[in-house]
Every structure is written in structure tokens, then in C-alpha cells.
Image 1: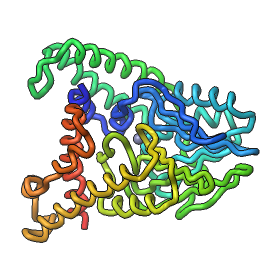
Image 2 (image 1 turned 180 degrees about the vertical axis):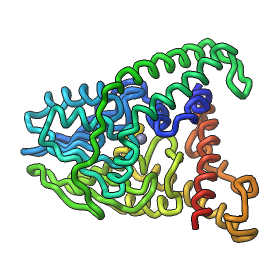
Image 3 (image 1 turned 45 degrees about the horizontal axis):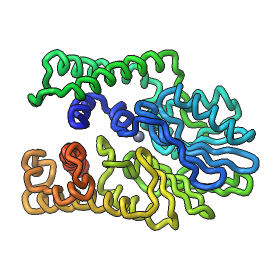
Length: 354
Ligand SMILES: [Zn+2]
């Protein structure tokens, strides 16, 4: 099913990250006293991390659907009487910041923090979010309807009853999403930083850092040095990286800096919590392999500006990584192949800019 799903969503760029989440149920994990991670149900957006100090609360990423943000706020109020004083948006993709406005309505004094490049992108893309989501959703719905009418995927695979049910669920979720986003006002960042700073929430220090470009031009992470907790945003996504855009040749170094931080709990932008760094190294190695192979091909032939993607992609083999990401999961293996193809395109596009 995931394969059809992915084919359906390649139409929608920023919506894709939201929908890619394999998580279907909302799930809360206590990381330590006063620090919680919320994995949203499908469509709710990327992970939210709630960091509670003696005086103040900092929330990392506010999700996608306003209803999910409202549910999170109700949950936070059960955990603490302290106000949410700070939000960190790890990057500009709207599955991590459309909830900002809901928080600001609930906590009018809240400061919304982002790396300076992220604020620029939020200002550029945020206000048009609804229009873009409507357009993407329309495309997704048309594709799904076509599949349901013909009973086949666009590459000819016959839909099972389970596939059909999931596609119908997707249609229903899309309709709910568009209805929910109507009337939403976009709230951009109100405080920016370049390299990083530290905030004391009351017996709880949180360091906000920009470690270099990766998934976007302004990826920020939150790090709790005492608790050894790291909130990584979409620099680290499970079960596969989000490579619709980004800077792969710099991303590898950023992941190394991330791994250099002393942490034993790592919250990814999407997916379950990590308890060691092996997945970060795996991601780094995948990106590095794509970068090395594309560059080697260009070194042997001609600069990227004289080449096409087709000239290059047959020389790049990322299949050794398939098993390491997907194990024996066939659907995930098929998704890996699509992600690998997109990654090669992204690396080539990056090389063309040099
Ligand atoms: Zn995301």
C-alpha cells in the first residue's frame, strides 16, 4: 500500500512530508520527567516535543493540523500550569509550524523562534500554505479517484480490497484536512538566531543550535545537555529520509555534528524515538554515498552543467542500503527505491548549482 500512497503524494511537495508518516495513532512518550514527545496521528504533522521547566515551557514544532495542536495544548495543560513561553520551529515545512497560530491564541506572550533562514522561508511560503495545500490536495484526490475508478495504480498494479479501503480513507482525510485549514492564519517566527543560544526554563537548560544546512537552509535542533536529549527535526526522519529538497553534500556534515553531541535520546522529525546514533550514521552514509558516486561520475565525464540526470543516474547504485533501511519489509523496500531515485536527482541538482 505504501507504494501506491507514495505515487499519489509525489504530486504534493510540502504535503508529502505530512502524509509520509506511517504513524496512524497519536502516541505520547515520556523522555524524562517534564519532557515529552508527541507523535501525531496521520495528517497531524511532524513530531512535537514538550520541554517543561520550573517557570516556562518550550515546545519544539507545532504540527500541521490545528486540531492536533489544540489536542497537544490540552495535554500540556494537564502536565503543567506553566505557560508555553517559547516555540522552536526546526524548519519551514508547514507540517512543523501550522500549529503556531493555535499556540499563540492560547498563549499570547509566546515567542516563536527559528533560525534566520527558516524565518525567511516561512515568510515566503507560509502565507500561501492553504492555497498550496488545496492545490496539492486536489491533485492527490484526482489521482486517487482515478485509481479507484480504474481499480489499478498508474503503473498497472491491480488494487486489493485493502488498497481500496486505504485510498478511500486517504480521500476522507484530505477532505477533513482542507476543511480544517480554511480560516487558518499563518504565524511566522518572531525571534531569529544565526548560530544558536541557550535558554533556562527554570532548572532546565535547552540549547538551540544551527549545525549547518541539511533538509532545508535553516535546520535547527534543540539539545538538553543535562538530560542528553536531542530533538533533530527533519534532519533525521524515519523510516526514510525526506529528500524532496535539501542540501545533501552539506547534510552529511550536519549529521556528523549532530552525532557528535552527547545524546542518548534522539527525537526525529517523523517516526519513533531513537536510543542510539546508528540510524544517524546510516543516513549520513547513504547521503555521502550518493554525493560521492554522483561526483565521481561527473569527474570522469563532464561538469554537471553539461550533463543530464539520465547520463548520471545509471552510474549510481544505492541498493546496498536498501536492506539496511527496509529489512525484509517489501513495501518499505519499494519506498526506499523511490527515495533513492529522488536523492540522486537532488544530489545532481545540487551539483548543477556549483
Ligand atoms: Zn516534516
